[in-house]
View 1 (cartoon, rainbow, N blue to C red):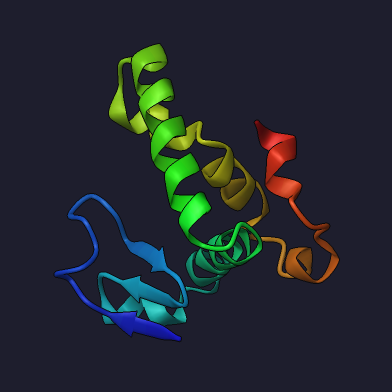
View 2: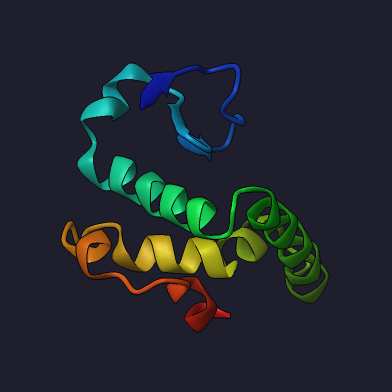
Amino acid sequence: MVFVSKYLVPRDFRGITLYPFIFLREAKDKSNAVLVHHERIHLRQQMELLVLPFYIIYVLEWFVKLCYYRNRNKAYRNLSFEREAYENEANFEYLKKRKWFQVFRYM
């Protein structure tokens, strides 16, 4: 389910996925197929990691990458979860063919 909420989505982001929901900052982004697909990839990642472990790994990896890159944006863009989503966000067949735990290929 896709919802619009400028209060739940951080200021520098256009969308955020909190299983089982996708929240977008602006209503116009509901028609942005690439953005919604990016967030659906995150839904699949969260589902296969049973949600809570996804968030734990995400935050821990972000802190490690932040220490390494010393740049918030660069750390975010290099997270394995984000790399998989960005690399495949325009491939609308990706989730149909995606293997389980594919995200670990990006670590």
